[in-house]
Image (cartoon, rainbow, N blue to C red; front, side):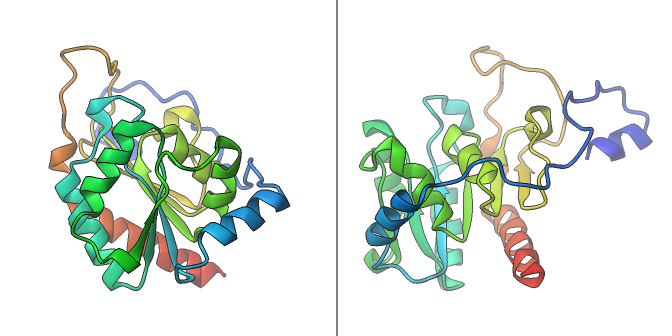
Length: 212
């Protein structure tokens, strides 16, 4: 998107972290946390999708619950099981709402029930991750988990998220400066439809399978 804007002579400032692609993961789970994670996830199939539907309290980063339901219904039909992760009672309620219509044997809701030292182990025991622009999703991506990030605007490059296994899907492709706490910042994530995220997810996971 950024390159196309440059070619079209659209005046935008260059994001500060675009010099090179990160080719190696930066975070590693210890062996004990992986053992604990596998015990938690034993009831799920081996196609595990880590889902981070929270937003760290920033409402403008929340993809609508109905969009999540449609997306997860489709990936479950593709043979995936879902692992929901998050923190706090509010995110647990969000996760409950999202999973309310899903088959009970297709997901595991670990929101607000996993010690912080075990979250990385849960992430790396999953085959892929999808989530809002939040710290838990960033953690999974930096640990090398194939990840699709759901963003309002294309901002992931600004924090150096240029990994071959990371893909960003944005509701608005305009690169601009904004602050989440600014009341003038618009809530645009409802514009990002489930089919768009599903398409990118299938594309990324298909490419990873080919590479392996």
